[in-house]
Length: 139
Image (tube, rainbow, N blue to C red; front, side, top):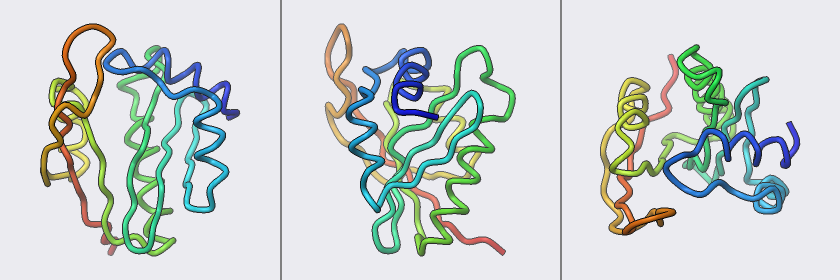
């Protein structure tokens, strides 16, 4: 999946915040710390530093949501991050994004903190981000 395709997919999937540009995705993926997992209708992008992974983006085309794609992408990303030495994965999710919060909870993520006014909205005030984490232990 090219950065242009990823940016277009993210623009369709992200109704709660502005999507990344193709240039921003290209720059992130050029880092040796980047970890990208793709599927025909989705992608997950993370950064792995030492023993921590940070999920930066998870997007699935709206026409293909609720079919297990996000679950598979996140599971593969966690496995690959663990293979790189990550013991914990962190992510931020908008406090107002109930479906995403519920999804991450079903994937084993727990609340770890809050970042006030983290997400700028297209219209309206900034929204707090909830910091969530998961131990990447595979047995």
